[in-house]
Structure formats: C-alpha cells, structure tokens
Image: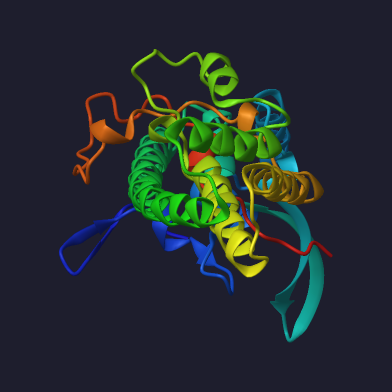
Length: 294
C-alpha cells in the first residue's frame, strides 16, 4: 500500500483517509491490519504491541476499551483461491489517535498520522459542541413554550397565585431530582443568584425537564385534576416517573449532570478552528464503533 499522500483531483488525501471504512450506520472505523501497513510495520506482530498499549491508554483515560477497539477475525485470500482467517482489531478514530501516539516515532508517517488524527478528532469535537449548542437552544425554547402551557393547565386545576405556582413547580423538580427543590438544585449546581437553572442545563437535562413538563400538563388536563394539593401531587408523581425511567435506562440523574454554559451566551455562533487545534483531544470527540465481534 502506498504510504505517501496521494494527489487526487488536486486535493491532498491522507493515506489514513484512504483506508477508512464505514459500517452500515455510516460510523467510521479503521482496520488495524491496514493501519499497520500504512505505518510501515512489515511484521503485524510488532504492531500488536502498539494496539495493546493504546488499549491500556484508553482504559487509563476512563473510557470503555470495547467502545473503541473491536477484536474480530476476517477471511482473506492468500493466493490460488485459498483463504484463511486472520485476527485484527477494528479501531475508532480515538483508538487510532491512541495507537499513533504509541507507534514508532522514528517513522515519518507516524508524525503525519499524529497530526492528522489530532486535527480530525478536534474538528469532530468542535462539530459535536456546535450540535450540542443548537440542541440546547431548541430545547430551551421548547421549555419556555411548554412552561406557559403547564402554567395554564395548573391554573385550570386551581393553582392561581404566583406563590402557589412556585410551590407547584417545586413539586415537579422534587419528583425529578430526588426530593431537591429549586433552591437545592441551584446550590448543588453552584449557580449564582442571578443564574437560572434552565439556562445552565445541557441538552440531556433539558430533555428530561421538557418531558416532565409536557407529561404533567397532559395529565393535569386529561385527568381533570382539581385543587392545589392534587396538582402538586400530580406534578411530583410525573417527575418521579421520569426519574424512574432514567434510572431503569442506566442514565445519569439530573442533579449529577454537569452545569453548562449560559444559554444566553451561545446563540448560533460559528466555530472556527482555534489556535492549538492539536491539543485537548478527548474520547468524547468521536463516536465509538458499533461492533459484533466474532
């Protein structure tokens, strides 16, 4: 395999881009055999040690090795129509990044690979951040809309005064946040007095609260709930059901989710590649490969 950067349609294509594969879900991955060949490892057994070091680095960084390294077998032709089974490892982009960091630094192609995977991973990280911000903006606007509808449903149930509505809202939070009221959540998230909880939620936490709000509104109207106490109880029960669902799915409880940047500072800003693009690469920047190892 040619390890030089080929000229194709006047565009410089990295050899690592040329050997990239995709699965049925359009998720990219690399074969360790192809990877070793590009890096100039004539004996694949020598590259297996690189893979093992990369797996160790993945584990030490706190990420699931099986999300980024998939040990499989593959049938290959060996000439005259004969075939044999060989072992290889399917690598995510992050796995490639770790492998290239543990490869022989004396090889010129290794230096190229380190730059390529650092830059590409950082680009994906920035894209993921942009998508998260757009998702947060959408969900926050949905929360504003549905809180108005929830307030109207609560009013129909007899929650009329602002003080009573604040108590009603607290019951929804208490159900979803394991008994924590709004002030408790505010303190737990270490927010300033002028910072609103909803403005500092990530998309996952916003989605949980949006589900709480929409389902509470629907239940208040559907069951024709009447009375402040009944409305409060209904809101808390809905919050508890949403929390139970998160628990059953193995998700992170909303009170344990990280605080996000203020939604008011985001907007739909356009990302540009910052100085130091090759630094601060994290596993969250790449989707893990989805495999069914044999």
